[in-house]
View 1 (cartoon, rainbow over the protein chains, first blue to last red):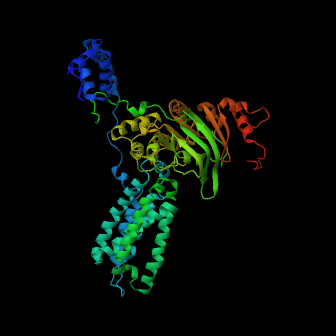
View 2: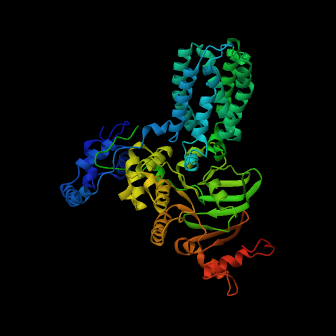
View 3: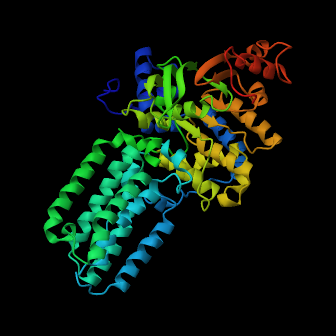
Length: 268
Length: 277
């Protein structure tokens, strides 16, 4: 079966014949060359089967090259700060703000007449600010070079948003546990506002979207709640399904508009 | 079948690298229109075809150079016309990732992360450009050496001078060996010696890729570019060799060198009623 291939590797006879030269028929030679191009193990066998004079020549070249190659310092094996693949490189001030605001909220908490927890009031705004920090051209100096890379777009958006939520959710969970608030009551508005910012941000720019949504939240929910000391309908347990539906809609919208996030306009 | 990692061959030439090009021009624009902001049509009906070589993009302020380069970098979606990059439709979402892997881009306002070292920043950009993991350290080192920053590679970006920051920006643009390299005002902040080095680098890069350099400095174009593209008000005014640009000017035109006289002769088109500047 020396001449046949059966999809397997070249035979020893073929390899040595190829290395010596002149012993293989034309069709066999061509088939062997085509196989060698695609098959690293057979190329390695060919290298070992080389005629003594060729091996001596290659060895001589290596002997001359080696001292010169040794002087070139090899490139370090690091590949940049790995955390920057998830979080935007400029998020540190926002992380500090998130932790401080939440800690302050828990510290100042007192059983108000209406019984409104501060955790509920800040939960949607914290991730919105984080998203704005990760995508704003005013905050991220390298937004334009980043926006022009292949990884920019839905993939990087998902990574940076995940990094924002990875900071916000544990902080809010701790604060919510400390003030005894139901998890779904802060979690779902938080997710809904994050998804809403991303969706609106694809249309008008992340910073503007964040400003609009934070403003709406302040005027419609926070102001009436604090001024009248009365629990807003949106913060009652009955509104949980509505928040869940809004979050799902927002995520679906972001996925549908994925192409917008690789353009410069999303960074306004 | 996956390729086995050869021990003594560092890098094999892949099939994609020797595949014949299926397009005539790296960059081809037909009636291209691109908006800058909501209202302004900064590029308005531009026809352009650029192949390999160094192309100098000249024009007065507000001619649409930066907007054109942003459209070529695929960060602005064309408002009209057709833009084809490396044979692919640049406004299509499908294939944009593959296209961007072959593009290098240095924006006019090059921002960077101050706490990163030069190497970290270029490595981060190589990761964003989806380069194969194995190639990143070597490619980063090569890019930093090509711009002459090897001795500052592990210094933080905030300690660099303006010219060094610019060179770090060029390093991140060339780290992925782009087939289309877009440099918006790369000579800003470089001293005369560094500008000479940059011109040499551009000529090397232009031997096998399409390099587009926008600049205000007419002498950069004369020295480094094989081809001049002159834009005014979003349209193409002239495309040709620097010699042909010089030939367009006469002794009566404004300027200190033949190329400057050609530049002002071509821009002083009838109906130019803008201010004295």
